[in-house]
Amino acid sequence: MIITLTAELERFVTERMSRGGYSSPEKVIEEGLKLIQMKEDYERRLAELRKDLQIGLDQISRGEVVDGKEAINRIREKIRNRPSPQT
Image 1 (tube, rainbow, N blue to C red):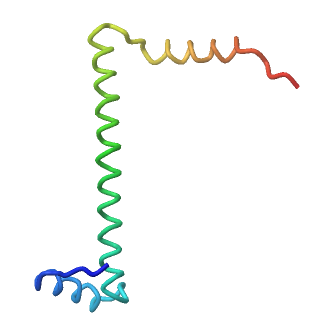
Image 2 (cartoon, helix red, strand yellow):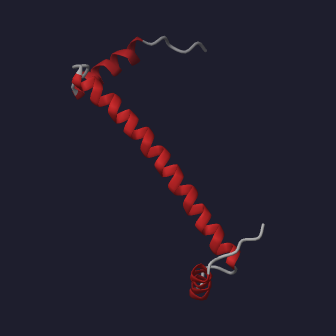
């Protein structure tokens, strides 16, 4: 693949290489692409969290909530009542 950069971006790549840490223009571009991937992963995860948050807010508005102590007690009860593993 051949990529043509604008003069401004070419200066940016050259500057990054001269500062050290990048041995070639390809390494600079590779790092930039990794950052794009990280940003996309972050945005995807953020959308999932917002969806989960909305589910929780909807549950609260319907009164489907339990205080922390009650939640822990329910979890402990489930653990106590689960079948023991067959050995």
